[in-house]
Length: 344
Image (tube, rainbow, N blue to C red):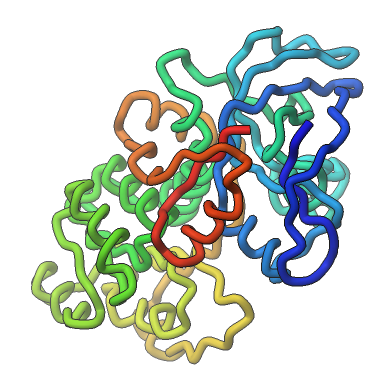
């Protein structure tokens, strides 16, 4: 089968290669991949800035159909339409696994970087990590369930946005837009989406198309002043930081109210952040760091997307065959695309 492979360590080294078709082992199923999304993690693996074990097939955002059952499988049937949590090979024995936090097990090897992933015709997954999707949900949109589950876990379960909250989202990439949609679906009274000058075309334009009340550009908008005006000087209940930009991270404290919350999603790529710690202390801020997804966030994400409360498919800007992978990565890295779905 044709697959997109990170062949060795270093920057680049991606190739479309003929790889053996996988076979499911005990407790595993074989999935025919119908759609696979490109995530920022895939770009980081390409650029050698995320842990990975080559040679490895990229991809962990997927949707597909079960086409073969391994020995002992009894929860799924041939023809089931599924998505799956990328928590493969968690150990099951450490204190994190035993407290229900398999997503941050230090032994985890997820598809796309630790083991072979979804940018291929077939993918093997443990059936315990799968979730069925309704027939009403198309495969391309279903492939965006994984990043949506991230947003649901981060915004709803970790930072606990509630009805009536005033929310500011920094960084209008796919995760930022999904976080904003999640906050709105949870009943936030007002969602502000903030981007930088390079975001002005595609990303901030998509935020406006999605109907967010206030869309700001730090290049010409005074974001703290706008937030103060919209909250009668109180500040935001929650700021969701999705940009990973050190100045934006430091600026979250100015935007929140006293006893406000900061949801930290964006990663800095190793850059240092000059954070106003004392200002955060005097505001009695709650800071929630977030990584990966929980089991419950998947069920919630599937429900919210399938019922239209989170129109996750709106972050998809390109649909391309797997053979066009190079164009796809170029479009993402040049910010001419939001979310690209590859069809193996």
